[in-house]
Length: 251
Image (tube, rainbow, N blue to C red; front, side, top):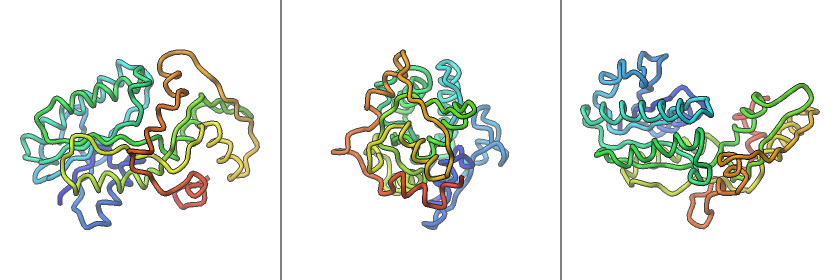
């Protein structure tokens, strides 16, 4: 199978590409580094020639709802239109467990992306996953002030990006399903606890202050909706502690 990965050089995109390559699929990485700009559409038509499946793992770093929505809807529309012309048979978009509870900012943009894909004529699957184990490190970089790290209250069941990559390739092999089972991790944990564990593992002495913030977005993160429903979800195998000890975590 020929699989195109939008955002294939990103944190999750690399894992998707690795998983597809391991299983003997032919992969096409869609990124500006490879001469393809999904946001403008430059190079997209030629890159999708002969592609069977497109996996959209694109991301943008902003909490501004307007900017994020413009990014996700524009890139999705460009991909869907190019896929239809190329004859691709399956569009997969990576999304987030519990979006509806935090329908503001970045999450509102991901919901808009889901609705655009659902309304399209292209055979598709929306694949929601919980926050990644790698998310703790991203927050550390953004919210650390000297000896203090601020962590918004967030309760979830985090999953390894490597397992997300394999999950998305499973979906590609299974064919369009409109909505896949959510993928969540094997344990329930707060973001603050993840950061504290990471610091302890890496031998870093720094205080972590958990904050409850106002607004729809932050209340949604604190609500526990991001845990998904373990009774119906697919459960990942790697705990956060196991991930810390793995080659995927590099202090």
